[in-house]
Image (cartoon, rainbow, N blue to C red; front, side):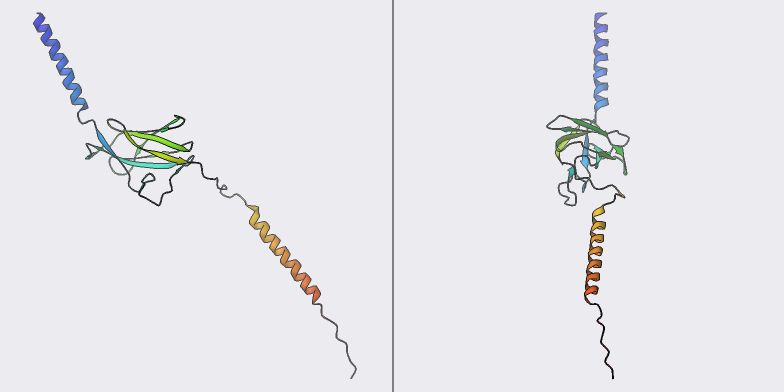
Length: 179
């Protein structure tokens, strides 16, 4: 009886292990960042990332580096290397099968370590060097008085000069001579 019980437990344990291996087989992927994206160091048209300014990360997830994987919810985790502050963003599918994008806004300047967890182990990437926020631009429709003030001053100075020159050139009365 003991032999039957031992055989049953061995079979159950072996079956469970095989089932776990089967479930996790093929559980790796390759994540490729979009070429020409904001984080592409070979693309000179982008001037980097600024704190408090949103930017887009686009990428493709390929199982075994071949098959695009759809219906995922990839998570991008970014950690400020000095403060340890974390920002977590969930990417959404866009475009072709297996392609995802995420809009990210980082709250402070400095180096941010980051990784994408999509399918299998997370993929880590080179840190993002985030610069200080850009100077705020005036809000749309905001009025800047300086150009108007300069124009009004120029017109007023021109009018005063015109009046002064006209006053100097007053027509002289010609004397009439009898004939």
